[in-house]
Length: 64
Image (cartoon, rainbow, N blue to C red; front, side, top):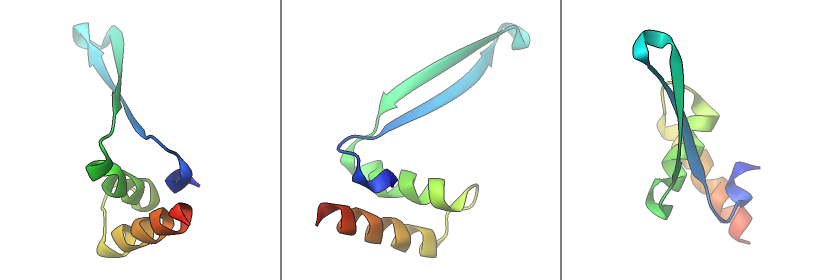
């Protein structure tokens, strides 16, 4: 379950040199973005209010 982690990271990739190279970035997510990122994982491209609520429930359940 993604909400159980103590820390979350956002991993992104982008192309460089007209597609000849790929750069991977890893950024530590602050606690304030945790719910939004879990909602994105649950919902996909369009984050809905239901996904945000589900993410919040997962975070609360993981906290005990």
